[in-house]
Amino acid sequence: MLTGKLIHPEIMRVLSLCGHGDKVLIADGNYPLAAKTGEAEKVFLGLTPGLPTVTDVLEAAMSACNFEKMEVMQPEDGSTPEIFGEFEKLMTGVPMEKLGRWEFYDACGEKTLRLAISTGEGRTFANVLLTVGCA
Figure 1 (spheres, helix red, strand yellow):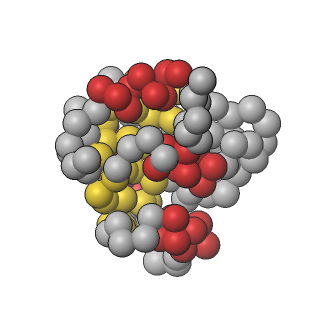
Figure 2 (figure 1 turned 180 degrees about the vertical axis):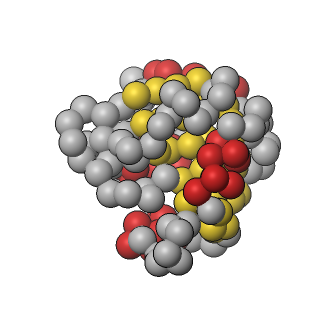
Figure 3 (figure 1 turned 90 degrees about the vertical axis):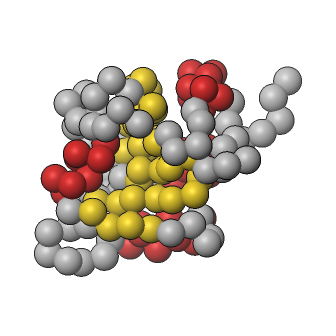
């Protein structure tokens, strides 16, 4: 019986194969996952509008894996989405890098992206690209 927060078998399988420097994308429901994540393994979790949220999935993933960096998609108008603060609160001490939309898409298309997870998150710019750290 599993006792941690993460119980999704496919996500656990792919995370177990990740090494230092590999990347994991947790995306909102608006993200073009199929088109912008290259050869990464894809998991579609969206159950209903709003569920699960990106932060729900992030919390579960953090219980199974150490992440050393996060990258987010900065809105073109320079505003800071509220969810960025939620990411920082959940991932205390993990540096956040803000990328432009096209730079973010390019980063998610790199071969180091091993897992891309689509959620039911309805907030825009609620995408986080995580770099796997050392144990």
